[in-house]
Length: 75
Image (cartoon, rainbow, N blue to C red):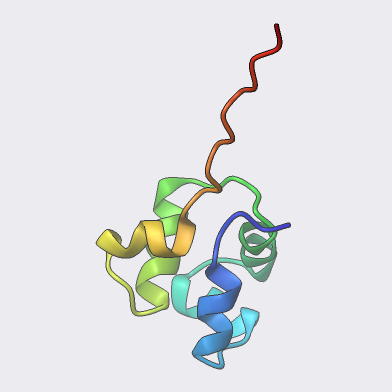
């Protein structure tokens, strides 16, 4: 399951993966990987944010990681 909202934001703009890739200056394979939750470089995230019409300050909204579950104590 993806760990980010890139696909949701892209689809809300009715943008194809190819269009996002072109606007961001990235490959469609990179967009596939990012939407699948694979890690990527900060520069890649910045390019995607700008291509989606977002600001760097919106990074948590788009790339927010899943909350870390607290460790359970076993006694």
